[in-house]
Image (tube, rainbow, N blue to C red; front, side, top):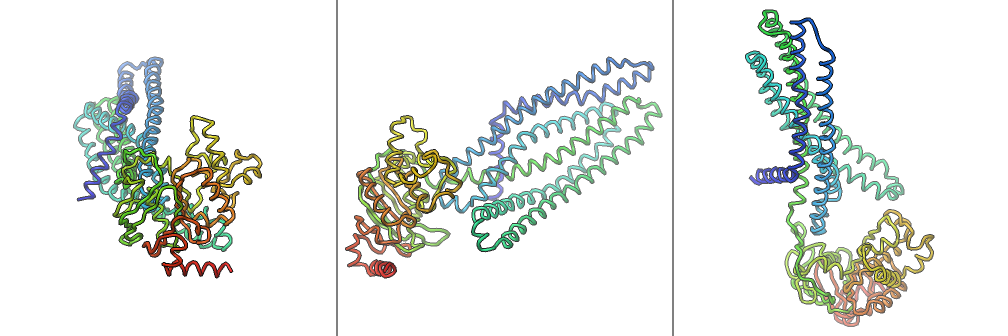
Length: 582
């Protein structure tokens, strides 16, 4: 029942998408009508010319060429206009679908995106959108033209010799029966093909990203084997589709040939008996050919529509998904106070965060300390709005986080992720990623200067050949880990944030550089609230508050001195780190 409802919703939404461009599509159909009229007129004209010649034994070639040439030129002009307009409409539809997908994904949680997988989303953005575009650019007009020719030629056959036409038209129900049997199986094959394409995209992406590791570990053979497996599966699926078509087309060809033989035999007898003129017989054969052509076209277009609906269903799954992070209306000047009340987070029934309660005062330095997989990054994701808590409440300066306008929130919060996200553009554009369209150049320059100074990027910029205009390679391959982290910090600081969140920033920055950065941070951005995720105690000894998170729970909180005295777990971490350093 749910699947039927989903299918109904998908079909309804697809129809709305088409009707949204109804004016252009109506114009397309009018152009197709005008372009196909000549094709339906020409066989009858030729038949009349043949009968006229049989009666008079004379023929006016100039008149024939003028009429037929004029009809052909007429059809050509409207076909060209129709082709250009259909491409324009298809590009508009493709743009709207990609924009709708982008907006939907941008409003979802990080967990939702991870569960959908980047390879699936990439396939939807490319292959699935293209499938819908193709049916808009070619399918609608082609289907309309095929139906028009089908009914037009049927009408012409009946008009010429209705009893002979009815004997021939019996093949149409047989062809429809063949279609219904085969296309039900083709739809499931197309779903498998799209799913397998996701696997291919994922493996290719992983192989490119991990190319150096694969080479070092000499794992090329296993990666090639993995790729060959999904590639072979893709071939098998597509060959399955081809096999279904290979049975469809011969059956239709056989039925059409039987109809043609029938006409040649009985129609020829009628011509000999003078019950049918030679011109009418010629026109009848031409219309019979016209009748078969749209049937072939409809078979291919039906496949296109099947694939387009499957692809649109995958697009609809993303665009209609419930938004997990609703945007509030409160535009707030953030000071940086944070409070978690009874916050829980579950993934697939597994507790990731368990009943967290803590308070962070505005303008203070707070560290989230704990081992790997303790849940620290999930606190970061919830606080930054990337994930939504399963239960409990999060407050920013006493206001529920879901009530705050997301644009207002992100314009005042700086985020430095654990994984460096570097763009293949200039150093300047990487830092000013959010502020690149700042209207006041003086303000922009001040933000840039402060961010560079605080992130200690001065030496790096001065060493680069083109300074801030140096192009950073893809994924920042020409930068060290520490340089990428400081670049990420500069990008966050260019917002002039009131709240700064650092996820394991100390992992790639040495202690002396981190100390310099912290000194400059509170010098350049007085009153900023700092929340830093870390596994090392030494860099955070002077913080106002340390939250010890272990096994998804908050075990203790306080200053370094307080935790040394009251928390056994904290003291053990401190002693183990001290002994490893010595």
